Image (cartoon, rainbow, N blue to C red; front, side, top):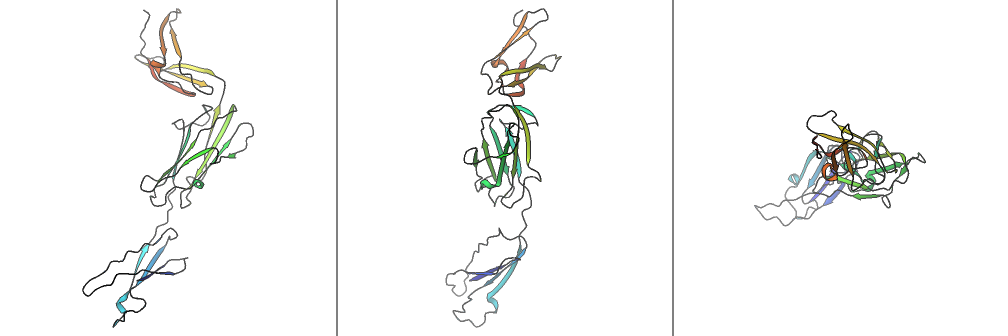
Length: 269
């Protein structure tokens, strides 16, 4: 069996495949694997049985066949998602000096696996120089390639220690194996780092409240305290309630709302 693929822009190349001897009143099935990565237009496959004319047949007119197929070009861009400590960052937010940044690139095409580090480019602009610095997979970034047979998603983990206080900028551009970019422009987010350990804001929300309120806070520094205490006083200066991490949950660097809250009850009456 000899077959060849005729596609626009590609040279015609013939390949041969040996079939088992076919006895009278029987048949054989041939399976052809044709790489389609370089194809993006209507193409044809030409097939010829017994191209060497051995054994000799009475006629060879029915030994040839052809069929057409169409390859659709992959023009759907991949989806890029960036999180800081597990959440999507708002522009200009205050974050920890030691964040865990996760970058995910997902493509709908299950056949062209995202397995190349060159598909994602990451740059960081520090406050001192103001110049973008491309991050290296050797020292800065940890790459997890997508695997065949699962969701086609590659990931990058970036765990920096940001030694300067000030405004940073992170830029990420991704593309799939077909070269489609995740966006016409790179994803870009600016964020603040303040290494001074301080609780800069603390208010309850909603205020006023009828049954329950939580606490909005702005915390700076390298890491959040493991233990803390909030005391609530009456207008006369009497302690009404004392809340700890057991009541409100752990704190995080940046501007957040506590997981737990206060129901307005008085523990000291």
